[in-house]
Length: 448
Image (cartoon, rainbow, N blue to C red; front, side, top):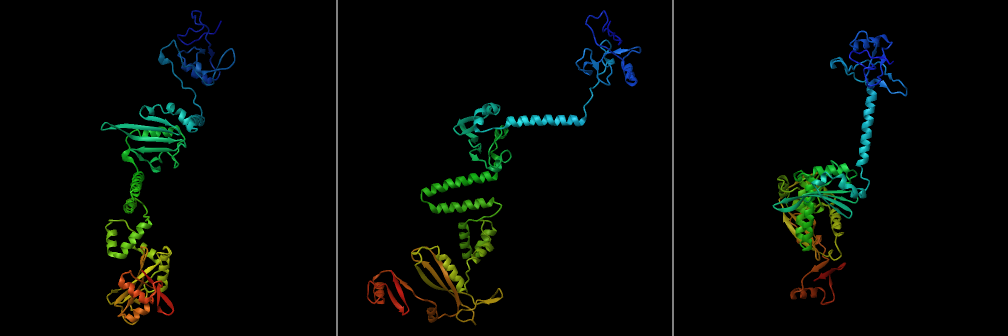
């Protein structure tokens, strides 16, 4: 006959109980654990007890056995307050921590694998199922070699594309907001510098972010990029109409606009040349323009440094020759035919001390102060080149002294009757002869 349960109210294994046989256990031999059992069972003369199923060890045997250190807790036939729910034995914290970390790593690895876009073909075939939640708001269009996502809004009853996202076959992404193309800085929060996508989550984040109006959040670089695109379109239109002067003006204004928003001022050759011409004409005006920030122009020291590399100085014949040689290298053979013009500039008599030397003495009288500057100017006969060949400070220069400074190699004239007669006399009356001799050492050419 099976052992009976001694817990008050329990009829397990009694003849009156028709539910079948119930496993019961004897009190443990360990005295400490035995006292826990006696205290747990509300009966003093108890010698068997019941335990919860989860306290049993599952082993391949006929009769089950108890886990270690368990005690009776559930008494179905007694009031509920006499039963207690004992917590199962917690695993070692380090083991539990390792288990949780491993589970999270496995979940993350599984998600990363499912998030990966293998190639454009995979994107092309699966984007509708992968992005179904976002496609309730976004329109899409599949084309050969690309996929478009776009949002259409109605402004004054006219449809307009507020935002478009284009994914090319190379997996590169192009995002436009109100037709303005976003640059790398605008997309650096989600895409690498190559602007190529590799995961579904990248597309989901882009679609979620730009589903709202972000036109005011365009970066400065994106705005400048769009401005320069418009400038280029305008320049192309002007060049088609042969309006090249306007193209130069637009280049100048566009450069000023870009310099305003640049961290480093980088000037074009065109701007430097124009700045130099303004500086040479009036240093005062140049300073006013810079100080009032009407235009962003190079610092005068920068222009001076550039000029210094040309090796030119009023009192240095060798440096002047170097400068004229540098200029002539950019001229064609025809443009190298020049006209010499001589003029004088009156100056105030004064002496100045520069770099340890007294300056402003006259070239023709080294003990006197200069009163005038004799200027020798050259200009191309068949070109637009005009330069100052030499500036000579002098005092009361005479015609004989000026004659010594000049060697005539050609005479230029138009072909009016008076000039023809004069030049015929110079060439000894020969119409085929195009030179005459002012000096026995070299010919002087006649040019019409």
